[in-house]
Image (cartoon, rainbow, N blue to C red; front, side):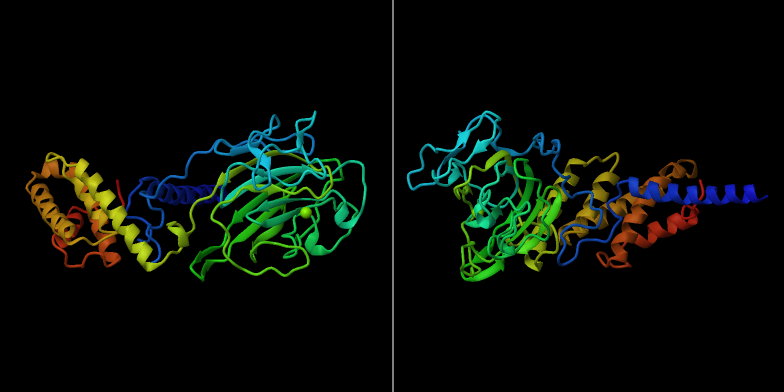
Length: 398
Ligand code: MG
């Protein structure tokens, strides 16, 4: 008895689960909450672009550099310094070297090195190792720096080496200490991932102060830390605009620090610079909604088929979710009226075959009415609703 009850309960759960799954997998556009004043996409919007495909790389260990993901732009891959130059006015060859182990090594006294190419917001991956032979202390031990548009993410051998907190490895130098010190011993490689978002200004107005997030050896050490302009020694820095793009620079601080496996990925636009993800301004939302509606209407036109008008009709109805274009509303009314008249004229034995089609049209109208996109008395909504009820198609039976 108990077993039977348990089986019945499992059966009920499975039945519910399968209904839920079916609803989620039908791909119906009339499903989640519609776009609003700050979100151009509906919840679970089928028209929203698919995330771009990236083949992942492999993770690095202190012993072995990993493989970059497929869309990474390689700055240093272990062979040559073709992407680098001396950080001087005229650029030119650097005195940094690629050593026998395939690492890029600072030649002390030779000056900073910089990439020939420039870039802005990025996910930067970089690995570095302080010299195995420990020399000096505090800021004098294994010091270098990763500079993004004048913002230094400190490189320092802080393994058993205290110094001022805002000058630790992975500090935003002089601005914010790392939240932890997860360093490997000197000589071993440290694996660092930086997400850099530059400040965005419109004239004097700050639209976004810019942020940096850093993982050092997989440990979060800078958590969306707000930028305060470029970094500097002894001086409090001030928030301000930075160039949109710049080279990546690595510091010569007199220590033969080594680097390997340096690459970056470009980041998507933020809302303040035209990105359309996340809550965005009413103006940007409405512009994007208009654009999506036009795309959906264009797609609807491709579905035109006098023998089967429903796909075009449903796609046109879908476009109303983004933009209540009057011409489209009229066309929907006309097409739905014609469709209903044609279905109604079918003999009883042919009507049953239209059940799923009519139900999907009924569902689309219900959705548009529920979210006040069409009025409840929108013709022929009531006729379709009545047909579904009269046929008993609203009952959940096969
Ligand atoms: Mg430094």
